[in-house]
Image 1 (spheres, rainbow, N blue to C red):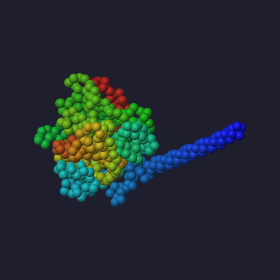
Image 2 (tube, helix red, strand yellow):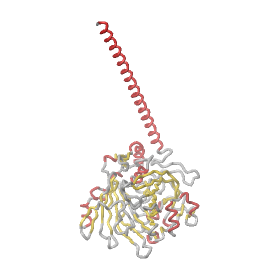
Image 3 (cartoon, rainbow, N blue to C red):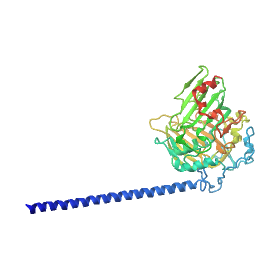
Image 4 (spheres, helix red, strand yellow):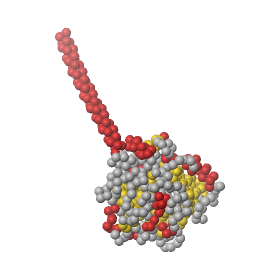
Length: 487
């Protein structure tokens, strides 16, 4: 009994020892795997930190402080970038901006028109090629390229921080973090990042256009021009000097106000719009006949603007406007392209607007095209969502992050609308901006111009300090809209 019992207990002891050994071995293997994972994560983190440091250090070295390629192109037709200096000193409000452009005496190198478009096709967009064949006044006077678009030091420093700080939200389209004012994604990897760079480029705290005309050419069958006279202001709350985290500010991209002065059918109407970083915007519209302010929740995206015969949607101003959540955004890459650059003629308040904007296109005497590198992104409407232009292509200047052009395609995949904007250096902000744009409808043959005081008799102005009531949040409320509309 004792022997049998001893053998029994001895076997149990051996089994226990073997079990303990196996468990210890399992723990050792688990620890080794954990250690390897920890080491791997540490190495990856170190590499990522090194990569981020290297990426950040490239700003101002191989890249401009805002993320463009600093070097010239291979044949020198695009020169190396220079930090500012496009404007001679001495400008002040009331003086012609063009007179202070350092290169105002440049002469065109050549002109692109319908007869030689094929020769330059590799530097033109599909939309530009279509315009050359469709609108007889449309041509490109190509000048030497001048690369001076930059930004103040605090914007450059904030941009450097955004190599690590810039973040897209979990929804895939909103911007959830960045150090502002600054380019949120100076080293973009996706199309939506490039878009936000254009939407959040520095333009001071706001822009005021005391007089402008939205111009729409007559129908092909005849009729009159639509010329809607108005005043307009923009306020960018994140544009104040210094440095701030976007997540600690109200999620506003911009506020805008405008009131119609003419024609009679629109005169007295006014609205305020708040466009957000992470949700659809708010629109409040004042109707003088009713003496009331109405909230307009559907007055956005591809809804037609009141008074323009279905030729102008809410998301077309300034090439693209509003919330980008209805599209999937794809980064196509970069290319060289002739774009409207240093085109002061499109901002001349003393110009004859009827001679510049014609039914056959913009008169080339007012424009200046240069060869620059642009980012190309494509927007495709999301499944289950409707938009009148299900596919869109955009071109963004690498130096200023300005949205320089767009091509809209209809539901059949046919090129439909083409937009071009015109960038200039701005003395007030020490940066570049491009509010003025032209839209061509290839189906109707009509030309639309907006977002500039060209030919309106009063110059537009940019502000870097929020000293005017228009650069306060309280200005853009429905109560204030009613108050200022009923004065």
